[in-house]
Image (cartoon, rainbow, N blue to C red; front, top):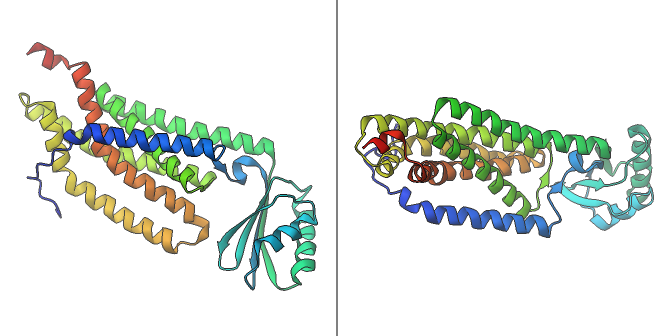
Length: 303
C-alpha cells in the first residue's frame, strides 16, 4: 500500500540547516527548562520518599489532604490529581515500615474525612540509597543502548552512517526530555522504559532509509550523494508515514483513554515517535551527507 508515490521529489536535504537550527533551539529551551525547574521532576523511583495513592468518594481539596498528612509528620506533601476524585501524595519523608505507615495514614485520613470516605490504594517507599542506585542504573541503561546500537550500525554500515544514527538517537532522547521538562512530567522508571523504546523504534526507521541509501549509492555511482539521499527518503516516505501513523494512532488512544497510570509513558512515546520520524528524515541522513563533505569516501577521491 502506497499513500505517497515513490516518484515524489521532495528536497529534504535543502531543509537540513533549518531543521538542525530548530532542533538546537528546542534542546536549548529544554536545558533552560531543566535549570528553571531545578532539574528533572524525579519520581519516587529516583528521588526516594513515600508515595501514597488515595481514592476519595467525593472531590476533596488538596489543602485538606495536606493538612491531614501534617498530623503524621509528612510536611510539605505534594498532592497531584491522578483521576476522578483520586490523588497521589508524594513526600520526602520515609516511614519505618509499610504496615505501620498504612495504619498511621488510615488514622489520619479517618479523623479528617471519616471512615469509608476514602480508599488507600497503594503505599510505596523508596530509600535515598535505592533511589540513587536506580538513577545510576537507568542512566547506564540508556547509555548502553546507545553503545549497543553504535556497534550494530558500525558493523553493518560505514562510519558516516553510524555517526548519523547515533546523533539522531541522542537528538530523540533530548527532545523527549525537553517536552517532559516543559510539561513538568514526572521522571520515573516508566519514562526510562519509554526512552529505551524510542531509541529502538527510531534506529529501526533510520536503518530502513540507510539501507535504501546504500543500495542507491551502488546503483548510481555517478550521482551526487545529495540527490541519492533525497531519492532514498522519497522512496521510503510511504513506508515511514504508514508505520509512524499506525503507531501514533495507538499512542494517542493510550494517552487519552489509557488512564493516569500510563499517561506520562504514552506522552513520552508520542513525543519520541514524532521526534524519531523527524530525526530520521532531517537529522540522520543529512549527517551522512555532512560527513561525506568533510571526509569523502575513497571512491569519490579516486575520481
